[in-house]
Image 1 (cartoon, helix red, strand yellow):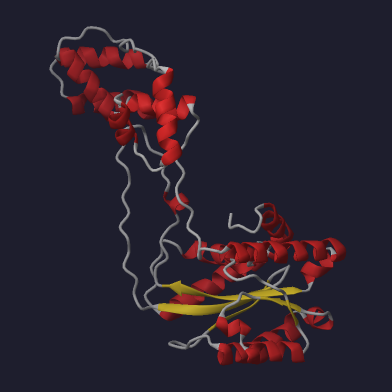
Image 2 (cartoon, one colour):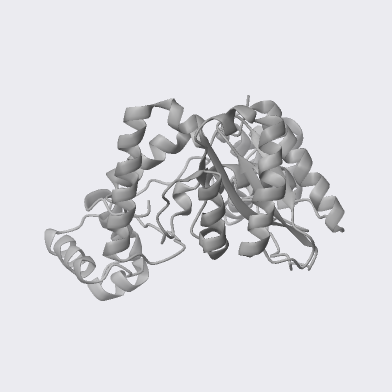
Length: 347
């Protein structure tokens, strides 16, 4: 292993021989491998040695800047009034450098920057209370009935699968050396090649996934047809024990799900409809669990035809069933507890 000082000494010798920055960097990579100094660091030391520097040690640093209490109090008062200052704006307002501002904010006042959290809808206080009340009622019911309640739930929702699903941010992370260029991603343009799926699953597995015909809207009539001609026969074939119990349907408050013809059909069978507050995808297992897992193998791959998308989704759901990863229904009590803890607010 070569220390940083060893590599700097070698750079100093190479500069004395008239070598370029690129040649120095390539030589270090050949000798030290991944432990070699980054290119920018090599370039900085090459410049220092060419300018006549002899030392291979880092320059002494001044340490943390000294700040007085008046500056700290002034910054705190500015942030009490407005939270969207930039460090440069605060530095200009207070009359200190922006590094001093960052030192005060992070190390003394304990501030950190927090990005806005995107939510599907701005909820009113009444809607917050409604989410809290529903979650508390469901949690109390679970405490009475236990896992028997979860075992009777079949949850359903619709989602689009498109010709190209971009990678998530965490899927694009790469290990790089310090100073390496940041990878770039181009925002893809979506084509008209897509398919809408209706997926139903319970505590153990995905029971059914259905692809709606092209250009078919999933309205109340189509949803009724799906329940009558697809879901109920699938439950008879695969999950007959659920039909022998008091089946519970969990779906969101989309118009196709709450129409009178749908609720009348479910009551006639009779299937219970589990109460779901509006604008609450965080309380729907399909949204917070299944659809993310379903689309993850599709991300970063471009599908040229609708049939290719349908086959890819089918493979993905089959793998989810084989691995036992369709466990979103099991997590419902923790979700209800979290909503109660947050007072009904979106977390």
